[in-house]
Image (cartoon, rainbow, N blue to C red; front, side, top):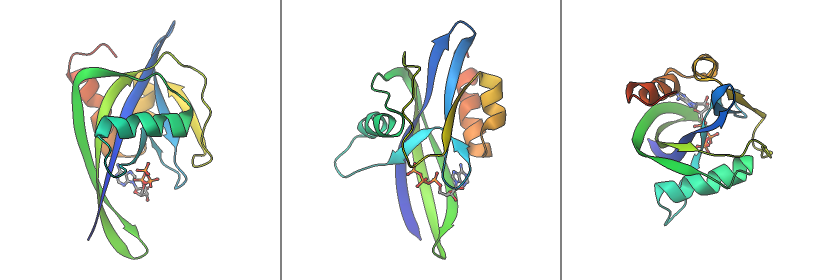
Length: 138
Ligand code: ATP
């Protein structure tokens, strides 16, 4: 089985309407948070900073202490099973403008409950729920 490791972040910004969470539309069709493969020598947070900049153009990412959660799943690539683990952080940005990378089909900023509905996979929904379980104001 192929092992794959990525790191990502639940990224939000404050707006007059409350906190808005960023979701990306991945080429295979699903909606998920910013994430990407860990390159050699990178810490998880370095990966997140690099991927956030590459995927969205956002350069100000402020990590919220105490949130670090792993999501895992399996998928098939060229007939082989891939086991993937993604370490997720929680972070705030003050940037609204997105320069979406050509690797993605689109993006959306959503309120907490709308983001929960939009996320394609249960594992991602459960991850977002952990934010409110922590007592963090969503
Ligand atoms: P990245 O480089 O950002 O880590 P990617 O686009 O290479 O991501 P994934 O988003 O991990 O890859 O998608 C790879 C496959 O796994 C796709 O078929 C996708 O539908 C599936 N997938 C993605 N997230 C999940 C999940 N949480 N649970 C189950 N399957 C998932």
